[in-house]
Length: 129
Image 1 (cartoon, rainbow, N blue to C red):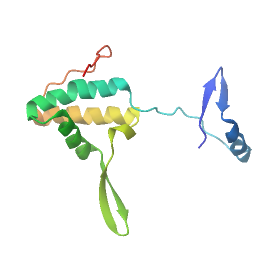
Image 2 (cartoon, rainbow, N blue to C red):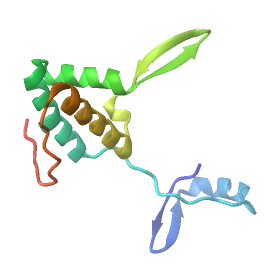
Image 3 (cartoon, one colour):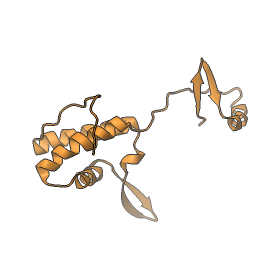
Image 4 (cartoon, rainbow, N blue to C red):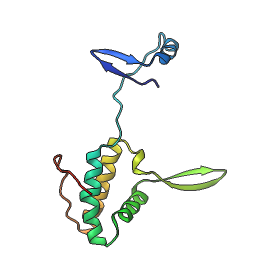
């Protein structure tokens, strides 16, 4: 995979990728938009609105709420030498779309299981810790 940018209708790539492009001579290539990392707005909404509401209902600290939901929705299995290990992704590794899906799952669970009322995200909201 090669990464570059489109600027003024032209593809810009790093100089050292030009040799890699030469290897692709005559082959079909696919150009797609890369999903960036999660946004600061997503984090502000999660930590400033969603987690505090759940924290108030459960009595857990916001950090504990985060750990519960990461374990619930971001746990996956890997095997090594015949043994299966359960691992949990951190929020820092999530892309924008993955973060949106995670927040949606947290809200859905909190609404259905904990009877929380969580307002929709407001793009003008500024969370100050």
